[in-house]
Image (tube, each protein chain N blue to C red):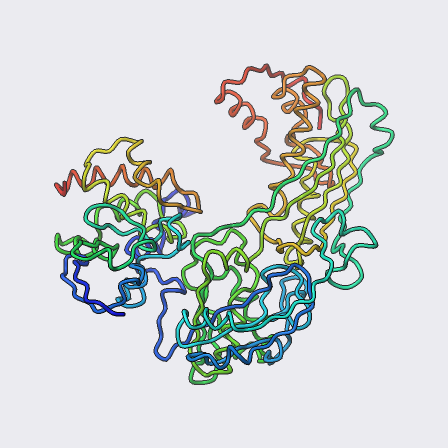
Amino acid sequence: MKPSITIGKSELRIDAKDKVTGKAVYPSDIYLDNMVYGYTIRSTMPHAEIKVDKIEALAYPGVIAVFTAEDVTGENHHGVLFKDHEVFCSKKVRRVGEPIAFVVADTMDTARKAAKLVKVAYNELPAVLDPREAMKENSPKVHGDSNIIYHYKLRTGDIEEAFQKCEVVVENTYESSMVDHAFLQPEAGVAYIEEDGTVTIVTATQYPHYDREEVAEALGLPHNKIKILTSAVGGAFGGREDITVQIHLALAALKLGRPVKTTYTREESFQAHSKRHPLYMKYKTGALKDGTLYAMEAEIIGDSGAHASWAINVLRKAGVHAAGPYCIPNIKIDSYAVYTNNPFTGAMRGFGAAQVPMAHEQQIDEIARRLNINPIEIRLKNCFKVGSLTATGQTLEESVPLTDTIIKAAKEIGYEFSYDSNEEVQP
Amino acid sequence: MNEQIRFNLNGKDMEIQADPSMRLIDLLRDELRLTGTKEGCGEGECGACTVIIDGITANSCLVLISQIRDKKVTTIEALEQEALKKGDELHPIQQAFIDAGAVQCGFCTPGMVLSAKALLDHNSSPDENEIKRSISGNLCRCTGYKKIEKAIQIASDYMKKDGVE
């Protein structure tokens, strides 16, 4: 066999030179002839019926157009799993920051000033801001008849009987917060029409192929008339998986026949893209007298905000990982993704797996404390090894270096413990 | 109202007619098309728009062009010119950032490189704390700080070898 020319060798990244010299082109670095600038008007209410009056803004010197829902040439929607975002809100806003109109003017400054002249009349509706409330039958509904987007169930063993046998049972609730990706480069993009009529959008995206479908459907054009060019991407971390600038720019370029650019401020960026799901986690964990983790029950409720985005994938993953890397023979896990009128949540580094450790690990610490067992030793006793069966029914057949990792980490931080592999819970 | 403003940009004397309340970053990017200077927050938090003014780093989103009269402004584009004069492709700081793997999304990179330059121009052998302090006004959301610190350390060695002190 020939030796590998790549593995084991450190490669210089292909774009590094452009990035250290400042020559890498991010979308806001693009300037084209005859270009005009767009600014997005966004909802200031979490839940309201709206009426939009753009007459005064259209009369403002330098304004070229104000696009709203009625101007969308195809389907007024987008969304990675469900089409539950509107390109521009038509009748109702469902969260603060939802796009209502796109003001296009000869300069960005003019577009911003004219945006203040677009009158949005709000008829405020009751909003639901807590997903636990949103699950109730009488709660205000964000879309359709129910706010529950998804329910994941995991069952192994007999949870009721198992808790009876436990020496200690620890019950706690945990809440994780909403987090923004805060990638350093705020959303921006440029759209223009090529000679053959193709609508080209240059933007920093994680999903050019999805974006093309979404833009084509919203514009009512075939896929081959839409081209997405991915510029340098100034960080993303999941926050560039949903549509932000793409359709607004494409629609404006199509209607005006001119290049259109937009660059969000940091504040607009916070309003435009998804967040990390806050999770409400109710845990009940039980262990036998010798420290064997024996039963675990968890209810995890994820706040999806006003749009589903990747809610199903995120709450499924939260449920799958809820028991942590431990052998627990009796499991009952329910995780839910729920609509509210909060900012919407979606993909962010870990996709739901990052939130649950704060719950399952603190549960183990509390069990260790009550049983007077060393917290490192209880983990070594119960953690996955080669041959372990996970709560989801997978047998881990190879490469489970968790024992070594825990031992090494504990030694590095100078935490005293003793380890006897004979005391491990057998897979 | 426009005013005449004289300053030195990357070694070149400039004389412009412009609104003195224009932000320096807008002059650099929108008027002069020096787009290596990035805008991340517009309020002096992130340091992506870092430039060097008379040897000291500044957030160009917080500087009005009336404040740069008769001053020397250095942007990321100057480093290449400096390297070319020596017959090199890249400035040693830029090379060090590549060699240390300190470049990820790249949006903080020009600002980081300039903060490193402002440090190394005054202090050819900074210690770890001095390096950390020099980039304390620059955020890297990819969280590559360790490699950036390493890059500045390597750059210091390169520059001493080069005699660029």
